[in-house]
Length: 621
Image 1 (spheres, helix red, strand yellow):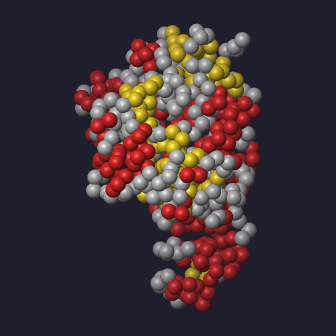
Image 2 (cartoon, rainbow, N blue to C red):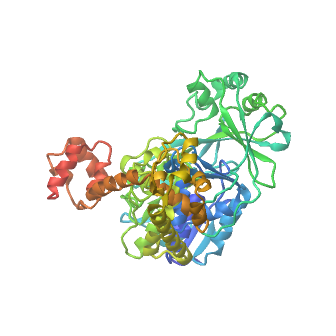
Image 3 (cartoon, rainbow, N blue to C red):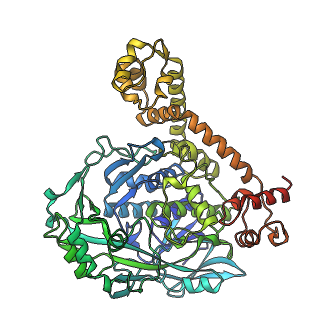
């Protein structure tokens, strides 16, 4: 019944879907094994994609040929560009999605790819011989052979759901946990750990008093994620904002003695930057209120996601506290919030390609690596899928540098630094974030995907060429075109910027602080007329390049300097214990992690600059 596959992907979440698509679009024959075909691509927690730094990741996945951005554009009900009050390096797209339509479109996309087969059953083991993975074993004892396997198990590995004093096995509400894989991997020598995440209650929107909440509409001119020709968002659905209060906090505290977080039943570590409501009121006892985002789950449902009210407290305590939130006095609950504990494997056990070091042809991606978030999982899945397919083709792995993509930062952090709490991406983690803006992801990454041989990029490459040429024209125009004092001094006076005394190039005006290109266009119609012939996003990107030209060049110079270390390869057979000039900690860490380059070695926790100097000398540098 089964053929021998090139790649088997275990798990049908965001990481699994992107892994399957990536491998299939490199020509591999792929099997996607999932416990439930009805939940392929499901948004298990909040009905949204993107956010601070996460939005950049979605655009990067899209630029590489992935589908998260395309599916988000087709299913979003609201779009907002976050951090617009800050510099462009911080701008991050975020969209509310129709959760049910999102999952349905992911399944349709998977089924439409002729290189992907689907098998619905729990995977309980791997076929491993001589530290080489060659397939999977299912709960019915079926063995399916493949050249590589990608594990994207999410929160299902020995998952336990906690609601107050109640515990039940499960990887998600209403779905059973996955058994067997952790035990086998530990038996093979892998180190495992436990992590925790949680989700809030879902409520009936018909029972809420919206008049007591703040309206949070989408952007007036909504953007999108994909660089392809996806449809524009025309009818947006608003979100709302409300707040907890002291009464809510007091009621929640009455359940602390029954909370699995505080009585020791939960051993896993939860996400620091997305804590439960009980964790927030315990850690920030001086705060009298916390903000809640009231988010619709779709266009055609009354189900509401209460973002910020994640909880594992007993259901009765959750409800008693909820009805004291403004607008929730008559709230009806569909289901309570819960916490979930699950197994993960410290990602320092992986190579930078996401292949495990202990077992060849086996790749890990997503929450199994200790990350949290759809976007972080999807990007790992896409990269693992590409590298699994490249391994089958006996080609070098595809690795993104920290200066090339947020995805490169994410994987480099995981593999070299590890994580002891759910890892979430932030713009502050990227040292080259002026280079890694969301608006230039296609220019950075689409040509790299084309070189790999990813199928279906023809129209994307045409768009990249047009965008690149258009941006170059815009930069040349503002560098050559002058503006006179009579044209611009009136505008400069309104923003308290020094007037000009003679004609100067538009570029010199644009580099001033607080200058807005749209306002200049009103004062100088010649520029407005020229820019009308160019795509809006290309104009904004070009203007950002001009305004921050000096900073961009500094980051490029720094990246080039650091890349010199990336070009110094370390031999796989190098015995670090014999390099006595290294510190003992360095010898142990380097022997354990086996970095491929000195650049990678320099980012391992515990490796000092003097250790790097010793390695350079040892490599003849």
